Length: 333
Ligand code: KG4
Ligand code: ZN
Image 1 (spheres, rainbow, N blue to C red):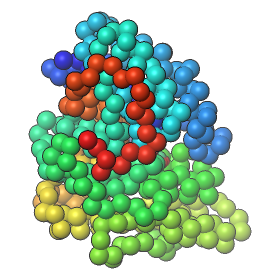
Image 2 (cartoon, rainbow, N blue to C red; image 1 turned 135 degrees about the vertical axis):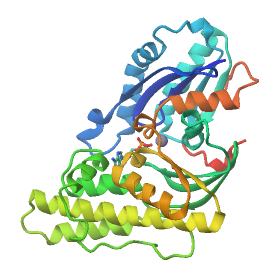
Image 3 (cartoon, rainbow, N blue to C red; image 1 turned 60 degrees about the horizontal axis):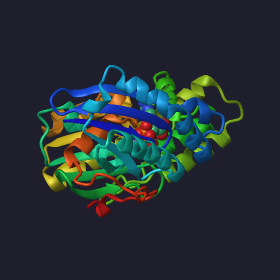
């Protein structure tokens, strides 16, 4: 069974084909980072237009060498995400479904992040905990079974990636700030600036990053002359604060749920310091952490194709649009 997946919820145009026997047999991702860099964030109108411009090329790259008539069904991200961007993916998916006369499966982007580790790691079994850390979301999810998810902790304000990007902007680093903060932090001292660890000791599993970012803003304002070594010290101190909070909350999650398997997902899961800290936690708490391949940390269509293969579809055609800018996991059917 072959499932074609289409992802256009934000600033990545992606297509992939998942074969239930062989795994991913074709994939292509185009990132719009350069397009949005000068604005310091994703501009929705530009994102939609660029999905329109790139989707055919991305589709051709991903399906190169694959007989289109061998594809059995099409899954696409129907939400959550930018409405205009989602509509491009949906329209493309609908056109393909009509021309190939195969079923369409609208899927939830967040669920894609939650289940995709089992595409990469055969040994992973539910229940497990997913720490989803991206530019738009920060949540700790108890994945009890396929389709049965409970958000047991989440950011009450900024997402982790968003905080990385805002601090990147304060330090005049290119967009998105996350990878650049990680890079310059290598030359910095994580103890050089005393920054808060918001909600570190709160009784629940919720997180907060807005105050930490504001605290960096005040530190930056106090500096008369910015130098690269100062930027590195701030970046290292900020990164250390974020990771300490994430590690503490995951420790608490293990205590409360007794779960033994953790997966990390989303763009921030690419952060090496976070990965090293999670590795240390593995030994300390006798748990197993799964680290996705870097290409599957950020947005991609492989997870959408894989999720589509799990969900399947009984409907052949959708006349109505299914896209939703907001689509909480609690509303999955
Ligand atoms: O999952 P993603 O590709 O897109 C969505 O937000 O849906 O995540 C992008 C986020 C950005 O905020 C980016 O700065 C952050 O992930 N990011 C990182 C790293 N690589 C990407 N943050 C910290 N360290 C990294 N190495
Ligand atoms: Zn995502």
